[in-house]
Image (cartoon, rainbow, N blue to C red):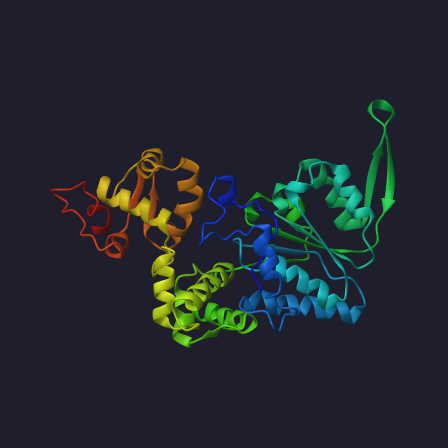
Length: 362
């Protein structure tokens, strides 16, 4: 499966969202273990991300032709789109071992020096959430990436001595969900940068059919389309929904996933036709019914739904904004006409309501 990120460091976790949220794009250790069997092993098997896949294929083939290690690779994009899996494919394509760690795990330059000094020639080092690495380790990484050398500081104060340590050539694959937080000196040292896009429904259908085959689940094309339409453009979520629908089909139906079975199963799990779950709908419902569509301040909206401000801002809002259901304005959060239509509500008249319609009629 091409949608795994191992480090539990996404905004959804820092915002205190329950780990079992069905449409969360992050994954815990147990789910990573389940997903491992579904990951593709090479670029030909990898579904979606056509541009990144084609460009990366050229980079790897050229490196193999030269008999050299591949250039350092930076992969950016939302959680669950396949950054970790692509790093494993890079190692497999180069015939090299891979070592996986994350930025938050490297808090000191000595932590990074210990990892780098133990690398084998040609090995792939995958550094997830690279933007969260400590500044001293980041500065050490500059020299390691460019010159394959690090300076290990021995001693303290005026008597401290820098001992140069040569490193074997290696390939660093960095992954980040926030590319804008990477300092330019670090970003410039990557030979290839790929941005992972959200998947189209037709691509998610291919992911679901592939996963269903590996899970030995019988699924009809309409059933796959129903799941794909509720998966938020994220393969990891599509795979998770597939497993829950499989459970429902085995218990409540004959084991075959049809459109009706998928819709009924996801209705049980409160995932609607556009992929909104309980939290998303709670935010929209409060915004529309309590505040007439807005504008309303974030803190007030969070109190209305009984959640922390950070939970609403970091977890619910990004998807609602991307779906065109909510807008962030200087005056506060505002519902769009699509939000009213999705919940089956009628916007208040401009004269008798909050003036919300006037924001979209100009």
